Image (cartoon, rainbow, N blue to C red):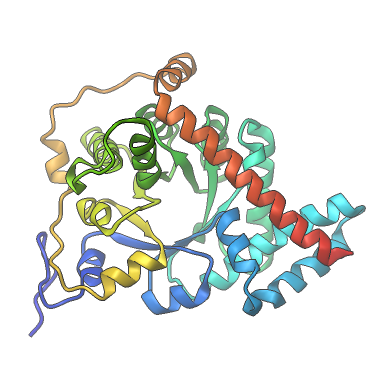
Amino acid sequence: MSESPSKKSRMADTSLEQLKAMTVVVADTGDFEAMKKYKPTDATTNPSLILQAANMSQYAPLIDQAVEYGKEKGSNSSDQVSQAMDKLFVLFGCEILKIVPGRVSIEVDARLSFDTAASVAKARKFVSMFEGEGIDKERILIKLASTWEGIQAAKELEEEHGIHCNLTLLFGFAQAVACAEAGVTLISPFVGRILDWYVASTGQKSYESHEDPGVKSVSRIYNYYKKFGYKTVVMGASFRNAGEIRELAGCDLLTIGPKFLEELQNSTKPITQHLSEASAKKHDLEKVELTETKFRWEMNEDQMATEKLSEGIRKFAQDAVKLEKLLLDRLK
């Protein structure tokens, strides 16, 4: 008789199954086959992941369908590319939702990261396109960069349109507090990219998992949210090793790439729950009051968060441009 899920571990199961008993596991990939294999609850996408998938031959029919849509809807080549890009994201999302029982995260163009109105408009367009495909908005999370403008766009989408948002490229505590105050559905703090910065910028080249700067950052955010009863949930993202994932067991959600899903699937090493609402309530924490002015100052003072946010926006924008070029070549 198998052991029931417990707060500590389930020895008979794989590490992945143990983790699923205490944390919602999300697939961080655009590869449908990986989702079918590891059976996550949700899935996340971004321009980089879609670009990788778009270069795989098995996804050519989706590219063709997006290109035809662009030709039909666009008034000129630039508009055709934009229409095709939006359609491609929606098509990938629809295919993903045939596999996962939960939600898919679809990312707003990183080049809109400092434009609240344009971000809101793009998000609403995505939701309308999904509804045209018979997908309810409750199954969609709109991904926005955690700039002040992105957070305000999320606030408007949540409050006025009932559209759920996933705030990404989150590296600093000020970003997390602003997201919670805005009432966003979910945040995605980037564990591994935080570690990358510390390895590159300090003399320390390796960390024990429990001392990993990314792990400590996400743990701090999780405990703060649970201590003060925020509805926003935390989804750790961007992992560099399975140790980071294990240290964040108990976090609301963790979005994990195929490499580490496989590693956890092939292991029976016990998973111990490190985060819980009950333990968070015991922390002696002070609530932070955050205005736009204070947010911008705190970001200015947080060199790591400022640099990684900027870098992340640039990289997603670069991959969006590459994806546009791929579509433009097909449109010709």
